[in-house]
Amino acid sequence: MKKQRRRWHSVAGEALTEMDKVIMGWENKGKLVPTRDLIKTPEQIEGIRKAGVLNTAVLDHVAANIHEGMTTEEINTLVHTYTVEHGGIPAPLNYEGFPKSVCTSINEVVCHGIPSEDEELMDGDIINVDCTTILDGYYADASRMFVIGKAEPRVQKLVDVAKECLEIGMEVCKPYCFVGDIGNAIAKHAHKNGFTVVRDLCGHGVGNAFHEEPDIVHYGKKGTGMLLVPGMVFTIEPMVNMGVYDVFIDEEDGWTVVTEDELPSAQWEHTFLMTETGVEILTH
Ligand code: MF3
Ligand code: CO
Ligand code: CO
Image 1 (cartoon, protein in one colour):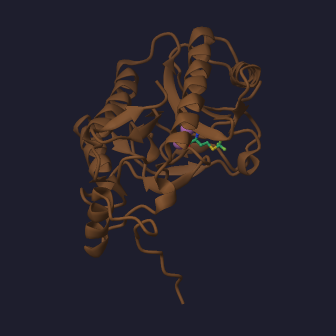
Image 2 (cartoon, rainbow, N blue to C red):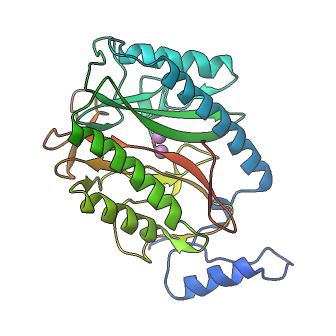
């Protein structure tokens, strides 16, 4: 028999809060609502906030040093050394067997690219650098695109639209909205520009662990997916493709995600805290 998910309940001995009532109302209508463990305590939020500050400093350090001709292994060293020197742990290292401290994904690589000594950044390349930092047990996750030299106009457009997709997703993200509201807005913007949105990978809850519930999909119908309430912490990280949305995983390394048609892909990611008024970026 399928295990029943525990329904939302008030804290023992305490009156129902306004939030309890809203959540129970949606649950009664058959919507997916969070479990209490997905709503962070003020102490947890402080911890994630600090991890976010360090994660941003790591990405700023990459931004200040990335250049044409460097290898992705050198980016890995920059990330690893800086993180450890500042008291953090790079979360990707040994995560489910991932061999490096950062993901570096060039051109047709969508995400989870493995840094390598054999891979040099060349003029016209676009690269996603995805850093996740653990500090005092708390996680923050963000990624940025870097353009090496000058990219072709359509490729630069892809990078720009992917960033806009993240910003638009962030703007529609209000307390008591649904994950599908975010995905719907993101996919619309990508499609309007002639691009597609990857379906096989998504954003996620984050903070106490690398990947928590809920899945934050970047496409779909409004009002679907989980209800998002104040205190939840999650990423939005749209992957936008120039061609088809299909992807495959490199069989040799078991990690590298590549576009099916091998046309370029771009991605930007932030960790967000849902507040009473909207989302706050924790990786700024
Ligand atoms: N940082 C990625 C994300 O945004 C996950 C990378 S998993 C790894 O969720 F093992 F490849 F590092
Ligand atoms: Co990430
Ligand atoms: Co992420």
